[in-house]
Amino acid sequence: MKLGSLRAGGRDGTLVVVARDLARAVAVRGVAATLQRAIEGWDSVADELARVYDALNGGRCADAFDLDPADLAAPLPRAYQWLDASAYLNHVELVRKARGADMPPEMYDDPLMYQGVSDGFLGPTEPIPGHADWGVDFEAEVAVITDDVPMGVSAAEAGSHIKLVMLVNDVSLRALIPAEVAKGFGFIHGKPASAFSPVAVTPGGLGDAWRDNRLRGRIVCRLNDETIGEPDTGVDMNFDFARLIAHAAKTRALGAGAIIGSGTVSNRDRAMGSACLAEKRALETLDSGAPTTPFMKPGDRVRIEMRDAAGQTVFGAIDQTMVGPAQSTGGRDGV
Image 1 (cartoon, rainbow, N blue to C red):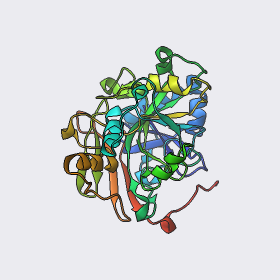
Image 2 (tube, rainbow, N blue to C red; image 1 turned 180 degrees about the vertical axis):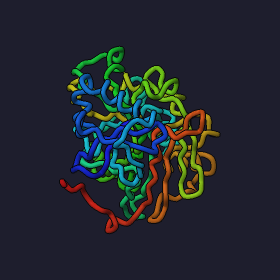
Image 3 (cartoon, rainbow, N blue to C red; image 1 turned 90 degrees about the vertical axis):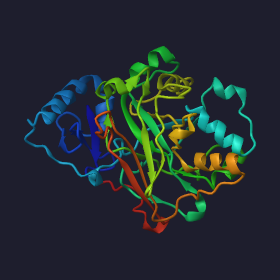
Image 4 (cartoon, rainbow, N blue to C red; image 1 turned 135 degrees about the vertical axis):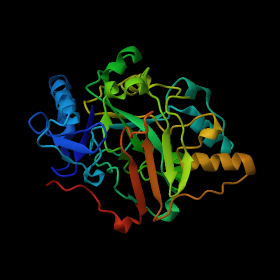
């Protein structure tokens, strides 16, 4: 089952069930007005949403309409909690090695995780605002949406709380991050609003692409006309999503609608390329002593997508262009 949120309808958007091929959608206000409400009452509404999904794919929804990705917000336009990890440690190893830093041994046993901006996400086609001297970078990731997760949940139990899966562009401002990290108190300026794929998909709707609490498939990352990488999301993931959820819930309960991110997808096989510019630059530094790839500038376009074995888009594409801050549309309205 695939779900999305129209921009129209206020800060939390309007929940729509989206066809398998992402061409058509139908609003389901009688079931749940927003995705947040659906997640909060998942056990009560999931079966009805699945029936609508089947009817939509069978051409039996009279109220269905053609879907334009530009009309979509993030599946959850805002969330009570967005926690992003670094589950692909190859990425961390490369970036640290390029700057001459070793990997602390505890990183292999205890996931890295930070709490990011969640009061307003970017939609899949919304521009990325930023100054060229901020070191604007994309990061292609996977994320899951949970229902209510109790404090202290075990990794063995945590997987059952995963209700939806989606892709992420975790925008990073590389030139601002070092000074913040040096303060030892977390990101503020270096991690602005992230963008999410047009739709979120239930684990069951992913078929064999979802196994062992991992998404399996190539996440294709393109900048302008260049493919930066096609790493496999199911390979070299040191901590699966159940482990990440258990880590996040060690000292707190997670409210329904919490989003947990994987961190930048990264494979040890260099032929798979990179899912962010920082990693590409790190590899260039390790190979030749200095990076040659610049960070993004206004006018650059990033596209992040995953296709199934038949070549059909799974989540739709995150397709964003960087603009100057003055060109940003700003926050959400409350209409």
